[in-house]
Image 1 (cartoon, rainbow, N blue to C red):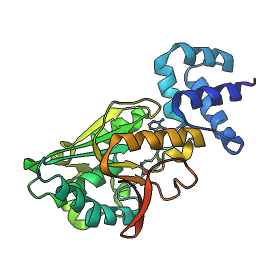
Image 2 (cartoon, protein in one colour):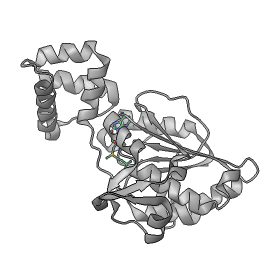
Image 3 (cartoon, rainbow, N blue to C red):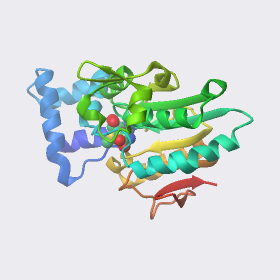
Image 4 (cartoon, rainbow, N blue to C red):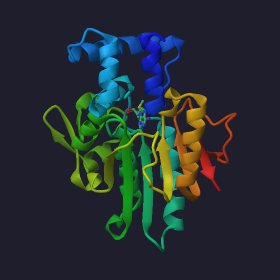
Amino acid sequence: MDYLSLFKELIHNESGIFFDDSNMSILDSRLRERLRLRKLSDFSEYYNLVKSDKKELEELLDSVTTNLTKFFRNPRQFDSLREIVLPEVIERNKITRKIKIWSAGCSTGEEPYSIAMEVFNALPNINLWNVIIIASDISLKSLMKAKAGYYPKERIENFPDDYLRKYMVEEKEGYKVKEELKSIIRFDYHNLKNDNGERDFDIIFCRNVIIYFDKNEQERIINHFYNCLKKPGYLFLGHSESLFGMNTPFKPKKIGDSFIYIKE
Ligand SMILES: C[S@@+](CC[C@H](N)C(=O)[O-])C[C@H]1O[C@@H](n2cnc3c(N)ncnc32)[C@H](O)[C@@H]1O
């Protein structure tokens, strides 16, 4: 087997990320970059390093992820969250006063912070509630940025003015997320290949993540999400992701102007 196929198989086994023929050149350039940083000249040497050094494996997986994201990405989904999903969840949980949300594949934090802003807006007495947003990713570099919660001005496009005033503080050439917003988010290093043991979610966001996985892995993760959700529960996927043709009990439902998958 040539070295590219070996790495392709290793990355797929470890993370679910799948390189097909059309994007093997990306894999090749990322690997060359890792070799350069590790001052190695030989791919077999690098393969042995990855196999024996967990840290290097994490760095390799980090280097092959696509971390593109933005605040309020796919605004229609945030409209549905604000206008329909959150009010339903709040009404249903008004006795327990608990809300649990997962942003799986949260990248640099824009997604969980956008969700947190909607939750704060929906719950004026949030201090009487137990709200947790678990924001997880396989990319340590992205998670560090997410935890820092600092975003240069150009990253703040699409941002409603009143949200900016309420939840962000201007700092240097950008904005920093206010501590109160951070207080309901827990950032976790987590590979979707594994089970983090978390259950009883009201809502899961996993947008623009499974698109990088092969069909079997997509189906496995989706059905895992199903088991992690409460009944009823909501799954938000990315714009170009769908469960069409997949063997899963999720039901697609048009909520507002977007399609959301429901466990009912
Ligand atoms: C394109 S970003 C999407 C960010 C955000 N959800 C959004 O829609 O804007 C995809 C993220 O999924 C993460 N990811 C890829 N494979 C993963 C895995 N096996 N486990 C956890 N996160 C993974 C990447 O590190 C990356 O940050």
